[in-house]
Image 1 (spheres, rainbow, N blue to C red):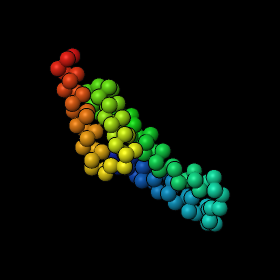
Image 2: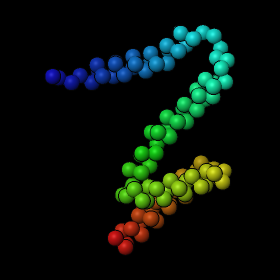
Image 3: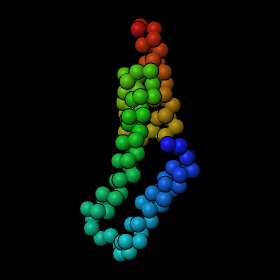
Image 4: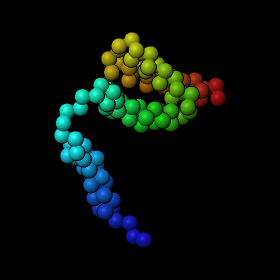
Length: 105
């Protein structure tokens, strides 16, 4: 079976278009249910977290350094630091933990 990249791209484009177009075409009235509104409000955040969290743990040399970076980032975000500050300090924490692990391991 010969793989054709253009067919794959076309199928992905159609599926993406349908996912975005169908809700607009089917539901024309405003959503009034507070439960549905709150559910739809948090869907993007849940999807982003579900895609990001595994990548955080697997992007480093070990799961331990990824977890340390995640905890540091979570703490700094809780303290309402800027995005740049959180990213830089979390990267620095991962770097330090990996250097320590290489030195002692």
